[in-house]
Length: 489
Image (cartoon, rainbow, N blue to C red; front, side):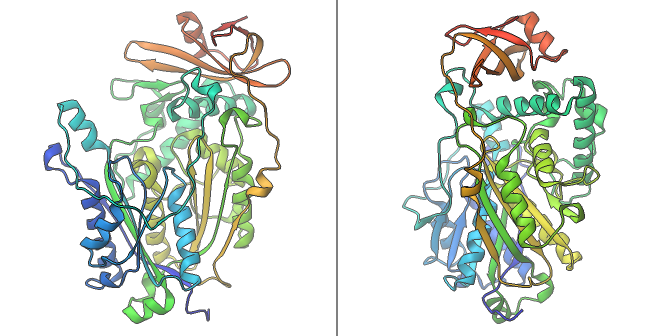
């Protein structure tokens, strides 16, 4: 390796906050400052953060206008570039890739990336009727990395289908039917997959839930594992009720040398790719696969000359089991591989858009232990919509960091038309049942019209919803009136 501008990750940190009193808890921007300082300690560069030239903050579910400037001020780099992002679980990896490109181009030498969420504190405050005070971080960002696009069309909105907990179980059921599994066999298989994630979390010192759960516990509804959306009980959902922060410090090789950072701390980003599936869910060709993951993820493996069958360290974005399975299938990851280094968003903890910073930080720790290995990160935003991929190693890359956006190729894949207020016969493409405190509350269905267009419908028929959780409804005929009410024929 001869390029002094080669990008490296030199410092990582992951922090948790377990404070029961919401008024005593630190707010996210303070957690970010703590995480950056901890990452500096990890790099062995305490007291040198005044040399940071860019502070990049991942957008969170908090009210700050522009927290990057606040963080920059607190770490002693008030003149650093202030960078933000849009919402999206893909954004951390996209920011890492862009930072690697910026370092390689000589636009920066030392960059801090950070983010934090305090969903647990927010939930406790809301329950107690407490309004949390937050620091004022006004002003504009100097730069935004990433794009913010609408990802739900009028067709879904008309049926009040707009939340991930409604959509990902529909992906799950579509995948089950595509695989030809019975509901019972399918539930056993995905609970066994999630149990393996739980075991990884139990061995991860940074995970929120360190107790391993067996498959039967994960798939069985109970007072502590309520049904959320068929087929998912609570333990198959992302765990957003966490207070977590993380930070990465990236610099060039020559800067790392000038700062005296030991080489055993360095982990190299080798390559990155990005792409998105159709912005509108209604327009997907099917609801059990992802062309963007297949193409962008496949391209990443090509760029680093890595066979997916040989990957040893990989963290597939794991908000729900369907996201993991669709990605693993698209990438060609063997079923024998447990595709997480953290334990996933259920057990490691799911601090919303900032989860991938935790998976990158954990991967860095593991690669420091085995520098000759390669690791892969996948990141997903929206409704299996926005995708980013990164390859890393403790060994220097054979050539400069490589990046590709393969959107043009993804855009050539098949799409489907949608219909908002359809009236007539349909075939059920996939479905889920949403649960309330008293049991099934509403059934949502994606349906195909006789001419192959997609529309959405709901049912509140108690007998139909119960049957949906016990029988295979995909492929069954139905009728929808113009207001989206489904009658199964």
